Image (cartoon, rainbow, N blue to C red; front, side):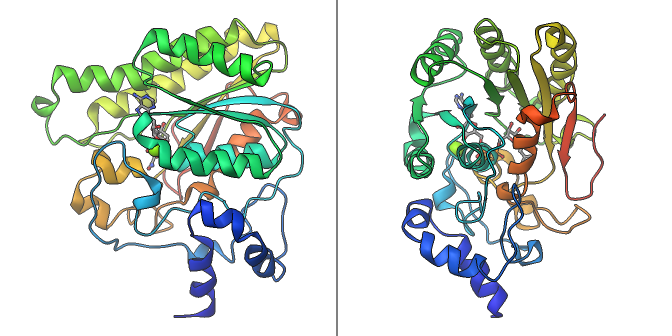
Length: 331
Ligand code: NAD
Ligand code: MG
């Protein structure tokens, strides 16, 4: 094992440990120049590549049980006040891309509320501890986004606890691989649509009623929006819908000074993929189809969520920010 691989291993550690291990992280980062808003891991080249060990978790899965553990920027993301004083609600903020955004937002000076499913409490606890470690307010609001009444309550509760709402990140999603359309039951289809399309609609409607000029909505789409896989039919439809929703709402809300942007990930190493999102066969070679030959780690996309919400990028609305590892970017 090389020194680089050793340091890489030290970076991908439990978040709970990460807080305690801040000293260890700074000793490594002392050797590496830090760029604000960038992960300061030794080198992206040291991130895990396929083949991956076979693994399967019950949906919705936990980041803490993945092998290797994803890097959400726990020990590496360095902020520079880009979201100072902002109040953000992030759905799916417990793990994966949403966790990376939550860590980055807190380090950029925002107070953060996260939503997740009750089964994800262990992952959520780690994120709450990381936000608090930055001296920011952290609010945990578990609940099921497939319920309209809960979505309304979520926005109301987040705004009350944070003292207002400046940023909504629609990030939670359901992805379950199904080989043929006949394998997608109506219950499956409804669960995917409710989580991935209805909930962002309900949350956005409730949020804009409370938002003032300067507020931002950040939607998560996917490269699947433009180049859907044959076994992700229902999921891919929803990611395309998010892109379209981003563009219409950007136009509608521009006169109010509220911006709406989207982020499009390519393959990312998150619980979504190991809890039914990918077949075992695809999982073992996950990321190999991307030109970079590996999946992205959540830490590598956090900066785009920051950019999408950054008040300094005030002319950017209706924009699509991508991190696909070299694959095609949906228009
Ligand atoms: P993830 O599993 O870490 O996050 C998804 C989150 O969705 C879960 O943590 C869970 O809290 C939430 N969720 C799902 N159903 C819910 C429900 N009914 N109620 C409340 N919360 C619910 O996986 P991730 O990959 O970080 O996913 C985040 C976003 O990234 C999703 O929008 C996904 O479409 C998008 N994305 C991921 C990839 C990838 O390869 N991982 C690629 C493209 C796009
Ligand atoms: Mg999760």
